[in-house]
Image 1 (cartoon, helix red, strand yellow):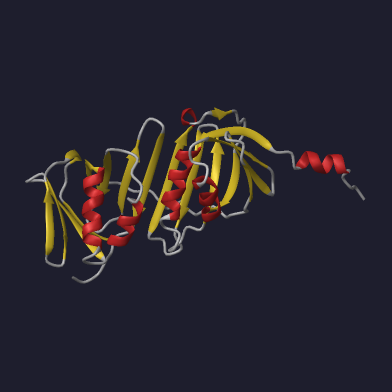
Image 2 (tube, helix red, strand yellow):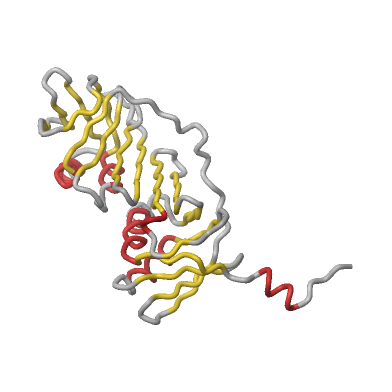
Amino acid sequence: MFKMTEQQTQQTKQTTTDLKINTNLLLDITKILKGLTTEFITEFNLKITLEGLNIKVIDPAHICFIDIEIKKNALIDFNFKKDQTIGFNTIDLYKVLKNNKKTDLKLSFDNDNVFLSFDNGLKSQLENLKIDDPNTDNINLDYQTELKIDSKKFKDLIKHFSGIAEGLKLSFDNDNKSLKLSCLNNEIILKDLAIIKDYPAISKYPTEYLKKVLSVLFTDNIILKFNNDYPITLIQQTDLFKIKYIIAPRIEND
């Protein structure tokens, strides 16, 4: 019967040490997931591809999907020749990063563990989790309405409405070029918009989900895509990364 020697066993567990990233960037990404942890996202896969890093997560209720892409030119060191996957516990990673956010981070990993080495000399070790990837085969959306809006203004409005009702209605009027946010007897009309696709649309979304996915802002503007009674897509994007959120509509009798 074939049996590996101790040296061969060590070789199969040899760590990969080709990824270095700014800790604050990874911390901010983790904050997005941590902000939703109470509801669903307690663990995630960090995919390492030839193009960079990717995280895809979806909640068990299938209300919210998040797709995070970090391009390789956003990384300090990136020399991978094949795709790899690291599985993290969201809270465990957040705690380690929070205490070392003013330095850069080098990731090394084997089949069982992830080793985090910070430029300040501190080191930490986490379990490399085995996590099933979410099924995203059916996420293929086509939109007729697409707007660009000030991120902070939109975040503040969502926060305001979250204390009023569980659902928020978005209504785009293509004649007046305006977006109305409304719930119960409260409404606000926005006209300071960049209109990318001009088509009337009305749909209602869970306010708490909107509030949570906007908990961390990376860009001055955010792109909104929605149709009548259709999932909404929110996108924050720069030359270095793209964060896409898809939230299912709230269908109910008003």
